[in-house]
Length: 395
Image (cartoon, rainbow, N blue to C red; front, side, top):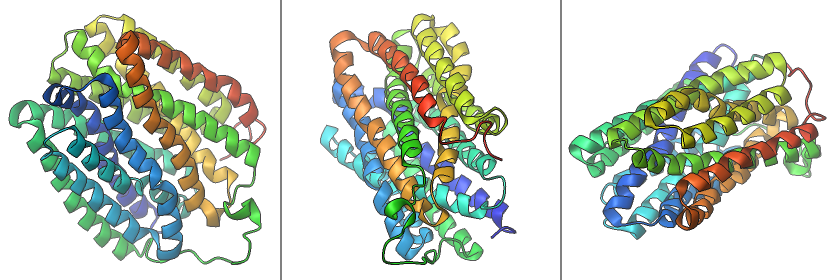
């Protein structure tokens, strides 16, 4: 596995690119769906929640199935289902049909995070694992940069239905490529051997070596996801109210995700150098400042803030993802990542609906101000996490 580690990282990174492209193209399509189907902000939030909720529901099952069958088949089938969901979304005739298509797409995409993280962790078991995971997360943000910008541009020229269907077709082709490459690398084709079927003594079946530290890490991830998701959901509406065009919204999201791509890689490396706790505190404080600045600034100034905001907004996740592997045993990583992603993405799924209802009541700018201030709650939780991890972070 060590000799093939870069090739493994490359194909899993490409898979992450495709799946994060699916997840985040939803943000630029939300205003178009709202206009076409006359949706309230609460319904907008429900649509985003459907996709994220589908992802959350299948995190743990994906990890458990992969332990028995290997990651390859599960990852490929999930990619096929996600792609098919977007093809169907392009043909949706109303709110309910769109909701069901995105729920199915989210269920399919639920396989990618736990299995991709597990495969990369195994490939770099004795190497620079946190940096490899940072690179893996960086690739996902490249998908977030490229796909929403391209689809937003296509939506203005050929319509959102055709644009969504075309990217769905890209996903279908990608699933075939993933199958072929992973087969040649002989990765994820069979389950990892287990020593004991009677009890899994370490971690009581989950492999969690430090329950208190894992709980603190998970709560930080919940708050981080539960504030990032509604901000991204309603940011396009703020920009449109400031005078942005639809293509401009796509460009703005590209700037934000470009910053996120840099942040996920750079913050993973920063955590290696200065420690996990310091990295989380810095990025979360910067996130609050950036969100409040975007809300208050005029359109052109808001564009300037988006790149540094993206670095902070998405940078925390690389630090958190890498720390999961330090708190669980190697043979239980698939299910532990599945547990972590289930809880954090479930929060991400619920938040847009909740904040959508709030937005209908008090307006989007006021709601996003609340979102920005909620990020600061993660900082005191870092004191609990400090006892579970080394400072500076392990290398």
